[in-house]
Image 1 (cartoon, rainbow, N blue to C red):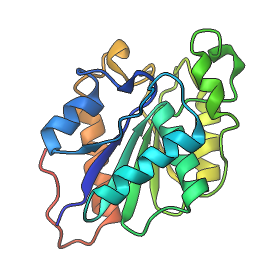
Image 2: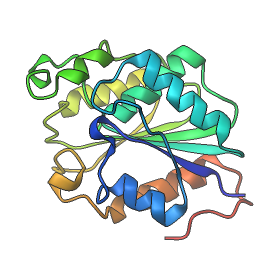
Image 3: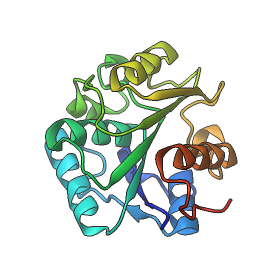
Length: 192
């Protein structure tokens, strides 16, 4: 059986035209909905992710964007992962330690410091070379610390609707490739 995709949005809960929302509808994904999507705290946001994981049967693959990536790494630090989580696609990780972000998005500060512990499951970091919320070099540092694979998305902004990534077919290809790497070969997978 194909793992269930679990969407882990960042600030503002990724609107209806965001690739996470489009994939949720397309693949029947589960979604983590925070009570306050603009004021993240590691404990509260990680606890909500844990609730969704526990309530969603079968094997799971997490797909985080921006502060959703930080939710996943904080959850892994606090909960030690989960045996049904087979991997995570970590897109456009926000650098919670980048103080320049706090003026526009003060909630990001609540996720600092960014955990730099190895993740207990395979992961793929997809980063843009011109993301306003994390330098490319910092995203590479995250991937190395988390023992994740790293892929450049080119000059893709924050890989969200504002940067032209509502429908994100290249991301679906990366997800498909990651699923092939993380799951047994006899599984039926998402069809693109």
